[in-house]
Amino acid sequence: MVAVLHTIHVFMMNSYVMALPFLNLGQIDVVEILILVFVLALSLSFHEFAHAFAALRMGDDTAALAGRLTLNPLRHLDPVGSLVFLFARIGWAKPVPVNPSRFTKAKSIKRGIFWVSIAGPLSNILLGTISWILFCALFTIIMATGLESPVVEVVIRLFLTLYQANMLLAVFNLLPVPPLDGFKVFGVALPDRWYYSLMQYEHLIGIGFLIIVLFLRGALSTLLGWILVPFNYAIQYPITWLFQQLQSALGLPVMPMFLQL
Image (tube, rainbow, N blue to C red; front, side):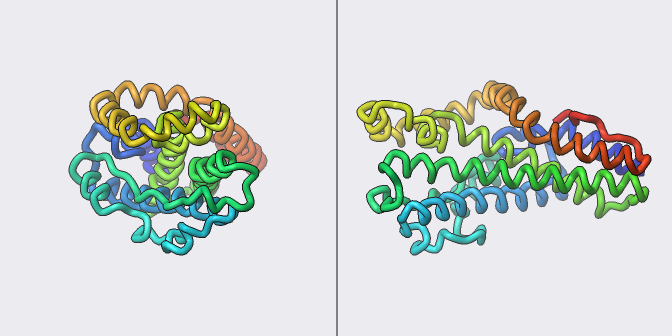
């Protein structure tokens, strides 16, 4: 059990910088690569599925007809984005096709775009929350049984990476910069004239933002770290507190209230 808990500590101290490929500045082993590929495939697929599902709820079945209403990574992963990920540690999924003019169940096109856009980050927050619950549950089982094996260590690392990657994906996509979801989410508060004018330059702004991501990733990592603080408190704190009560009731050592990520 001591070895497993040591692995948790070491991995948590290093996993922040490798939870997303564009933040990965260090060398990682084969197991970590496999975990990262699995996590990103699942997280990006769930993110794009959520967009497609929300669009369908708004009345637009364009994504569904295109086969994007699925969790199959092969329907979402972009070949070029995947290749770039292998060489440059940055990648992307194929954007879900959306036709706002078909939003028959939305009060307005802009509100429909809002709900479709926010569905992606919310899906990552949901997946991250589930991952943290599973991590705390496994932590409790390890403390209660002394369970220790290479498989357990891999599962621990998997849950941690799932949590961290999804929270980073959520806050990254909530940045109010075109073409990220955050622009469409927060853009609902902009006057229509400003909103649609900026949308016309979405691709140019996106290229500029990509350059910033590539060359100023240290500053971006710091910014995302600040934004993550309230998200971590809102999710980790209550879940960890509940498991602390369970651990205390079972007479087990209590896990730290706020694990450093």
